[in-house]
Image (cartoon, rainbow, N blue to C red):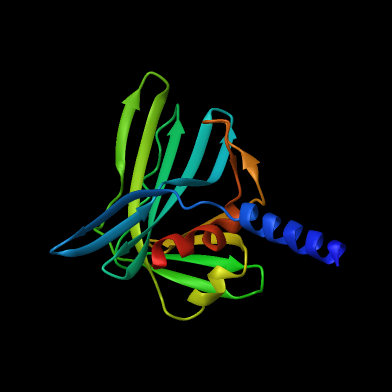
Length: 188
């Protein structure tokens, strides 16, 4: 009987401490409604030959409508080609279970902002995507293995890693589990 008690205690402890804590950046409730957003989370990082690309996600719930805030940061010594998001842009997430979840761009048309600094050029592109109803529930249980972004008839692919340590802040990120870990934070 003691062994069963210890096993149950151990399993409950692992389950309790194994969950990611919700890191909420904004939580507003007023006469206009409610808005809740998670902190930005780095999903992708690539650095090669003086060029770098970083992608950050943040989930938000605006009066019950769940959106994905997408931020692309590109840095290069050379000129950076515009990455434009418009009403026809789509973001596809391929899940470990073989299904594909489609997100539709819902923000303003943008080609980002090009800034020049001492290290070269930096292009910042921000977009807001909404989830289509189909396969949305699969994001809560299946890992994301691949992302494809369709912009202006051009596709760009980003494979997701199980985990990586960012060169930017030396933190460990687990992009495959992002939706499993953080969708629960904004659904309430």
